[in-house]
Image 1 (cartoon, helix red, strand yellow):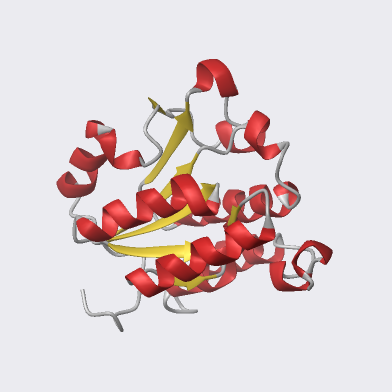
Image 2: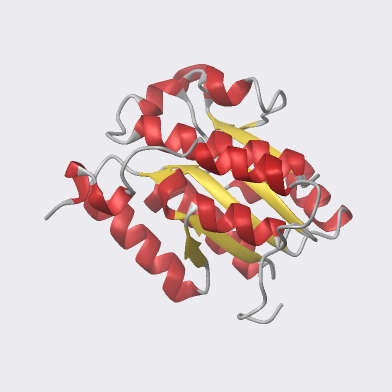
Length: 197
């Protein structure tokens, strides 16, 4: 794909990484990240995009938080920090002719970063909505996203991704997407107390 090519629902997929309560309990912006992720899942489903989820060592870190688990019933476990060690995921990406993957979850500088870098290396275009990923510390979140942008990932927001997936206001799914966007509440990540200098 060209770097300037829009990331529409066509040939796109959503990957939700490790949104488990034991990890989320350490994330200051957990509620905003869960809300943004849930909105993206609902939007992807409305646009008939494939959605995958993973869990990092669930025996020790527990299951995915319930608001996300109910939207993604199957969430294979992993011990590698990146998701591309899951053969079923990579097989489905290639099998469904996926060209770009939107990656969300935690933590931005570890599992998200390593997954995005692996996907880029495999030839996929990668999008990271900044309000749907998080780290325990602001610096890790910020520099994780910086590194990914420099590596060629598209850093955006959940709302931007939803409307770019949708493309047009005259398609049947637009009303549903608009309602999903309205569910995104609260100040943007850059305006939250946690991210003020």
